[in-house]
Length: 129
Image (cartoon, rainbow, N blue to C red):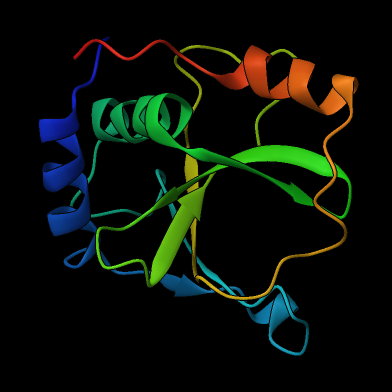
């Protein structure tokens, strides 16, 4: 599956419509966020989750979460970001949970080592547009 920048508009419009669940286990931490699960989503099917995973991996911005590199997709307004926690070997069709948080604090130093950059390169998918 390939995605384009036009798909970003589709996702951020849909993100305003889906029912996000508050991650109450993180309610008293700086990592406050919401999530959607494939198993409980009424507006999204597996193909939609995979498509969002591809968008994150294609257009996401790298950041470290307490030393763990990941890709974060920021909305056009710059107010929220979404992400997935990928397996050690990311699977192309894996996406059954998507997280969403307000753009805000960073978690730990953002100094990328060669190992961090290798992980980002492992996660990244090539843009098609």
